[in-house]
Image (cartoon, rainbow, N blue to C red; front, side):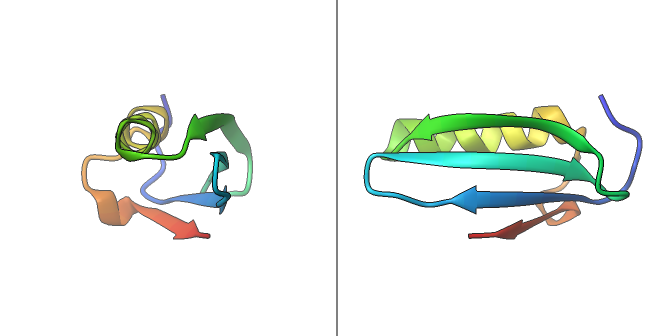
Length: 65
């Protein structure tokens, strides 16, 4: 979806759900989603971050929780 090398994800971590906001390297919004707390929701979050950012390696996404 994007062609930049690095993206940034802000994660609002809570006990029931996690709100995630993803931007490209220039600060433009790529997307945002809410994921359930727990193994399945966290796996969905990781998969979405990789797919939405176009990252090949996890270190291409900088996260702040």
